[in-house]
Image (cartoon, rainbow, N blue to C red; front, side, top):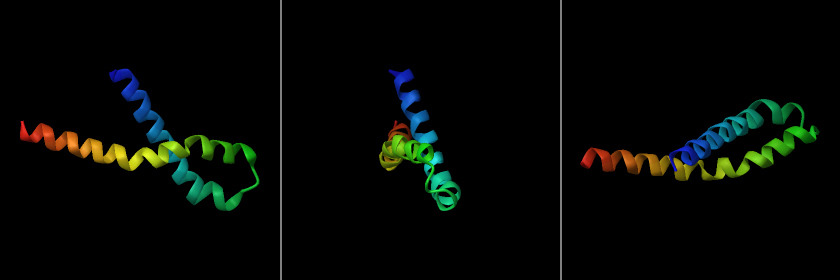
Length: 67
């Protein structure tokens, strides 16, 4: 189960990094490149789940402090 969680976290980190790269660097310069757009939509779920993972990590840290 930990391996699956690490893979999911890696997907989210890579996806969120690509989203930021797309938004600030790649997007404004070349919007016609279909491969970059495909990567954007592949990593879009990672961007959408990122806030949930932050809340989960904070909740886990608070639980550990209470114990």
